[in-house]
Length: 341
Image (cartoon, rainbow, N blue to C red; front, side):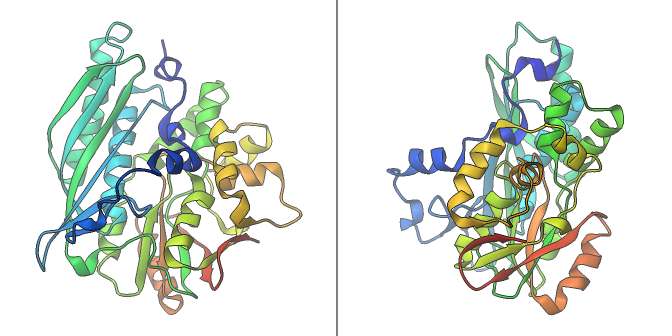
């Protein structure tokens, strides 16, 4: 049985929708009563941050999901890359991880589970961190991910809400992972499609750690299950600004537009659009497939980076050394919500 046939969904498309999440968390106590907690559950940011002293902050995150590819090692690599990304999105340096494993033990071969774990370990080795422990359960569907700890200096911390009016928005990875995942489930993806998607999803976002020390970089977030519009809206709300997104400038996986036009999409796209519709202005001529790209849930997607406009081209050139498809996709503007042009 294929890995993707063992799960009802896959990747970050499995995330609870933004509206559902807000409802579930509505009556939870706010953790910001602790002065050392710089980022907690009061913000829609990528990880929690605790300041130890004047020189050191600890960054903590956890992320896990069900498979969106059938190769076990690739699933492990992608899940680990995705989890570590939250540390990089805060401007931090990961230092160690704990594995989170839930497997239908009677439905999977031990060799397959070992391959998933090996893929995660491979990615952690690439990031220069150990998997120092973890926890496992017998679960009805396969689940794998990591809890990750990182460090940064307080001045290098980058929240998703630090954008300033006029900032250019750079996206580091191409969009279309959810659409490709749907094509994989429907046996419409070619071997080249799968290789392209895996290569993108398994590429570490360590550029975030490099960018955090640059004063011209004002905000960073990673684009995952809520899509460009969802994570862009979190950035806009956090900054008290609006975002203007140029749909034609968004980098795409090679066949994302064609697959979207032929009907490949995930149910998470509808959920994501419902969450942002009231605060998003669309051009009259936008097609349904174009909207699906804007709401497509990304697994281990790229970083969305807000950069001072006069420095944007230099930052983009540096990002492209690691992420050749990176592009300026818009800007932060006075106002609220998102305008798509």
